[in-house]
Amino acid sequence: MIHEVDEVLKGLLGGGALTGSDIDVSFEAPTRDWAARRNAPVVNAYLYDIREDVSRRQRGQVAVRDERNVVTKRRQPPRWFRLSYLVTAWTKTPQDEHRLLSAVLANLLPRELLSAEELPGSLGALGLSVPVNVAGVQTESRSLAEIWSALGGELKPSLDLVITAPFPAYPEYDAGPPVTEGAAVRVRGMDGDPPGDGERAHRPHQVAAARAAREDRR
Image 1 (tube, one colour):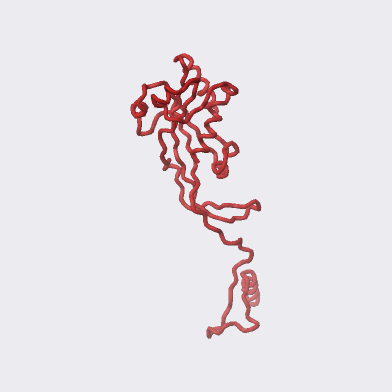
Image 2 (cartoon, helix red, strand yellow):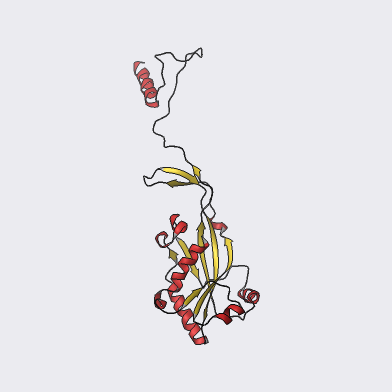
């Protein structure tokens, strides 16, 4: 699931005004060694935090349907996880980095919600939309200063990007075949003997008709 979110994010970051440019999108940790190796403008999206959004957790079961809309399997509802990315721009001058961050922000702001049709693989197969939050109020337990300190680098201008994505729950359980007949009522004698040849299973509508006939005779 995470690699599919990376695939979508790469298209979002490199789209818009950056389409066709020589700007690369990297998901590596922006450490000092990484910064020393780069030799071209780069937009870096470092995944620094993964945690479940427990407010979205659901109970019960979800029906899985085939092309005929018949329920074939059942599974638990998907679990939602917040993927937090530290988005930075890397060029030779701060001014160019600011311009690059502005272009990235312009690409992300209109995309507050990604439809299922835009999502690849198993992520799109769930048929759920994915919310995107950029440069919002930081709610994660780690501060940006702590992240940069752990990376061994200096603090840089960055965008905090959070994509809340569903993760399919396993296993799936086979569902029974659809019910094609109504319930049946079998009548026995007062002494508990099994019904004779003339006493067969009665359908609910037959029982109701017999009861109505008796009431009419009263």
